Image (cartoon, rainbow, N blue to C red; front, side, top):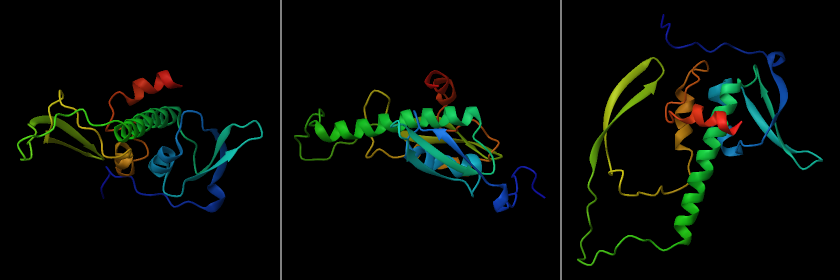
Length: 174
């Protein structure tokens, strides 16, 4: 038996609870992308605007979010908004990169960067070829790539593998 991977616990419908959660600082796209990794495959949420004009998420799951998970959602949401704003501003402004006058495609220099991949019960080192930090390589779209691995994390794993500063920044967002 593999003790490193938690086995899914079957849930009964009567075990599900629905509760309100403030939507302040948490983007809908981020919540949708991460909810099942934090609360299990049966978890879902809906959005409601109150009479006061505030947005509230109604979360249905077998357990509530932990405070650290809410802080992570806020940090991921801040990153998501930055990515979306960067992508939008890229489309509004002309490129500042010098034009290639030789007619040939310029090759951008790359340098190896050491990263540690954090997967459930698996720690591996990898070398990626990425542009050097001095060059800017804007993202192609405002995506949620930083949360895609949420699905690969066990529910008890509270540290997001893509953002070492997520938890520390999240404390300032609360």
